[in-house]
Image (tube, rainbow, N blue to C red; front, side, top):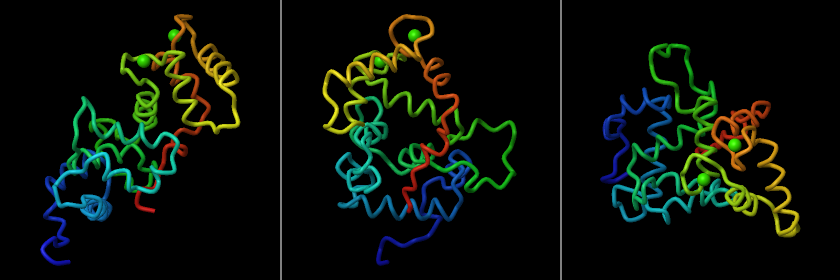
Length: 196
Ligand SMILES: [Ca+2]
Ligand SMILES: [Ca+2]
């Protein structure tokens, strides 16, 4: 292991992170090792390029958008707590919940609502709180293969927005988004196993 060591105590604010993210001590430690392995030059933080090494993101059509969510407000680097907070959204529900959660504690990051919020901001490219027709089109373009023509894509985008758009303003708000996904098993869809 050399100078890098492998002690949980080395994780900055491990207890706070555990409470905040729901990851167990063992998972945090594994994530910390993952973080260090991704951090190729031992910078102490990860860049976009470092994150592009994650296989699960490389094959995900929204991988680039997901990577962007590690870097809010135009930031260029993500430290370990920031890394873990984003990953917590993908933690499968009940994976490590031991039933001892404080009911007054804030909603866990991997709750359905937080997963929906995370998914929503992947679509809402300009961050104005609404998914416009153009944003829907851009995300669909990432998700579907080349066999779909631009015309077909536009009509899918139109239909998707229309179906979700309850107040008729031509865009999808977060509430409309959440409602249109009511029947979808978002918990399962948004559980990516970063640790295999
Ligand atoms: Ca928007
Ligand atoms: Ca609307």
